[in-house]
Length: 349
Image 1 (cartoon, one colour):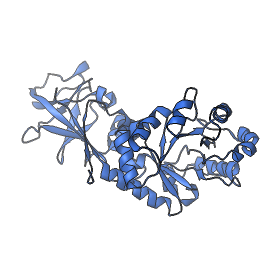
Image 2 (cartoon, helix red, strand yellow):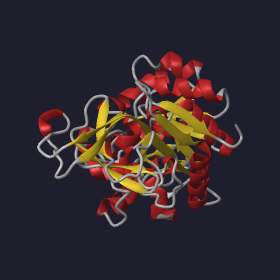
Image 3 (cartoon, one colour):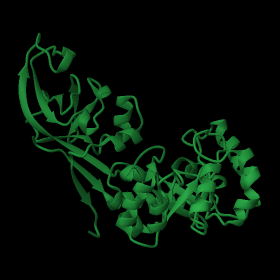
Image 4 (cartoon, one colour):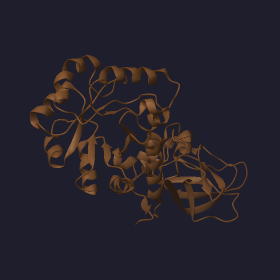
């Protein structure tokens, strides 16, 4: 089967990081979040491009991701592990110089006993109730732990993409209450928090989805293009149907293109009869069900059948596609499949 091409513009990625760095302010350091294999785009390539752009601190979800980023970057840049110091991580954290963000009293105990003197940070729960040391626990351990010298105290906003949501100020107040007077570097804002303004920035911001071209960073340059090859076309007449479960039939004779990609490649099934592909500037509706390896597209109105159709490109962002699927751009990006031929565009390369 012909393979689809996922084009990744590393220059645009770097430009987006630089833009978020400028928004963070001259006194604030901007880290880069490269978890989930660089949001599905290849953590090694992404991290190297961002390091070239000036990023010196990186965030991953788990130690194994940190290992891949360390291999790509070599010694020097700080790689922070958001899941903290989990059981079985000790050797990897030590050998690869990874910095865990400790999330619980259990992790704090494990880290201080297993790796005394090894760098660490602390993640605090300011109301999201996901990861982090809770306020009562922090009050008990802070005097001892601060003496051990965490590299940072951090927390995470639950509703930063909704600027007027009351949780933003509530969490900000909680973060101040837990960290003011500590004398330690602090990090509170990811992409959405950067856009909320300086009072959320503290010492370190964490650029994430905005680097990859996603909301809420509306000024972002486009990073990904996904071009899907047309395998076959056929004329479908009224009374005939297209695809599994016979969910679409034409009102008039139609030319239907069968295109090489499906839900195994990250094109969610909820896009069935509900998405658009593009031939240049011309939209072409996806018709019928998304299947594992194939989709079908109405190209009746085109002058000639193209070799490829774009499902991500100048006219359709990851967020546009996410809207059609009833999800968010994060899921679209991180679901992009391994069967795509990946083409990296970079001026310095």
